[in-house]
Length: 255
Image (cartoon, rainbow, N blue to C red):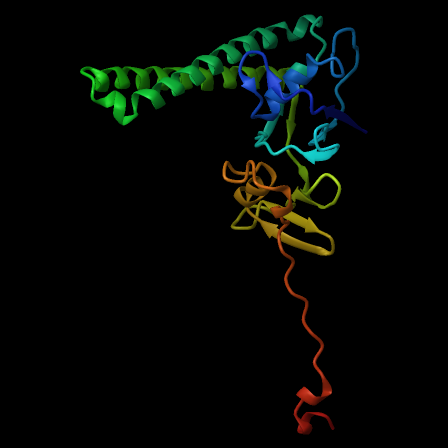
């Protein structure tokens, strides 16, 4: 049996870090939404988890549906501690670490913004600008190290409480809200030893692909965000061989 979590399009921003750019942030924001609240719920997590992202919204100005153009990353292993009812005693440690993780992400976001400002040519002309930039970069390295250590701790807690899900498949919609094409990626059963890690299923065409190719199509790239939806295209199927005509075959082979 599997369980579906429909992450609604209204849950696209987090109070702490702003617009959601990862699946973890989106799920956490969704649990605080009216449609996704987990307060008072009591259920066990399923062995297979299906996350449904609602990428379509109704444009009141244009009076038609449109597709949201946003980049969203998803991890290889998803820790779903945020889906557990907050009243459960055994999840309190994970929730506290989740709060610490949000604070680290906020500080890291601020640090990166300061580094971007200090790296501009206008800032470099001031005395002491290089030293201030080096201090910010050292702070950034320390924050990243803290974040990595905390991720390891939360992963261990997730293993203990059976809250980890390994990515197995992704369904993609290319096109617009009113028309488009669905295709999917699944983990290859024979990956490793130089074999492709993923397989693309596009109608009758099944093609192997790398993890990077899968993520470029499923997560998108910064250059693709804001591009008209009509430009999105699934991987092209190889051309089918054309039947040879009798006139194309040499006479000596027709007998």
